[in-house]
Length: 533
Image 1 (tube, rainbow, N blue to C red):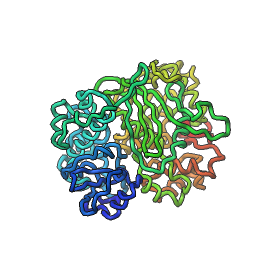
Image 2 (cartoon, one colour):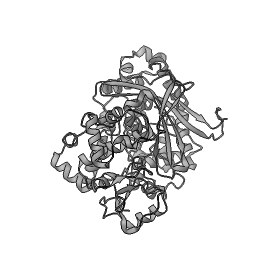
Image 3 (cartoon, rainbow, N blue to C red):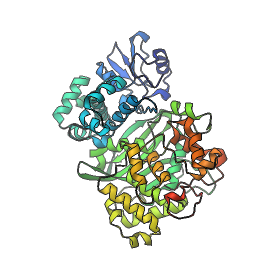
Image 4 (cartoon, rainbow, N blue to C red):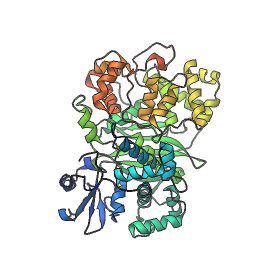
């Protein structure tokens, strides 16, 4: 199916029908099938009886199916499908429309009536009318219709998977009132929200209640590689990555990891929400199971969005592998690790400059112990939150120095923390990538390598490329950043994935992983010790 067409007519209908017939999970979220005889639309993986070909209409986006009058399937649940995350490097109008959709998809922006077209247009530097025009050309619906579908599907997931009160579901999904929520649900789905409530939604464990939801992804997915990445970087008190036998892996062995549990703080609507989340894979169903503490219930859509970003669940492997498989045949299941908090990732990136993964992990754990707030959880070893920007900005040089953080890193940490605390620097997937990279590089101790690394993981930019990375250059067989950049042009717009594959390539496995150039780290000597963030 061509990625540069979005209307139902532009989709290759026969290919869509074949994918639906075989329940091919690689196409999950790439299109939706609406059945005219039932008035319902489904994911390609739906296990209901195959409809007749002449009764099927195919849509790129759920919003298009709903705008055409179809309701979501209650069995396959379209809200579980991974998002369509297409990228382009050529068509300016397409790029603008995709960036607008990216802003709408960020639930951090959901307040009151949510991000309206006028606000998004102002953010992108175009007129409201121009935005609506290019958005409708790209997606077949207006920005408001797109946002409404996102809200309704988010609410539908909370209703089906949790026992949250309807008032809380409405507010968490971005509706200003229960009345508006009920009216929108009735208008779009012809149902009262309570009719979708499942008897077994939600769960409780011990004294600390846990909310459980499912998140879909497209195969192939190397789950153990992703969990292993986080295990090697887990900070004491903040993260715990468990193995199948519950023991520390022996040196030189390849452990089997089962789940990641960590603490999290979310600032939203003028309030701070703190708790914990746990993520584990259900590979047979191409899903991830997310458990969230009850204390984060009010911001559950934001938690879901950040969990998806952390494990890169919205990646489109077919498009990525088509561009990278010839150069990196062993990395088709790799994803780009994300972050649940952009500021935390930026701090860890600075701490990881020029040192080993183990050393950066030690510094990060000390920082958490010194400045992180305590948090009670039911998980052993999980007892602190990552420090806030305000806490690090207020930390003295002597306090940071006693942790082993050298002066150059202290300056960079203070600069980033001050900018984020003041609201001048946004480090999340909805941020403008070029301007954020430029703003980062204006800060002391932040060079191109660190800025690109933050863009790759915190901003979720699939085309980030830290060309000065020593191990990356070695894997590509070049010796300069310019040569690495020239070699990478064929991999646009998926160079972030090329970087991960180069770091994991068999030829590079015996050598240290990665290191930023000295411009990112003051005058410290260059080592090839590994990406420590």
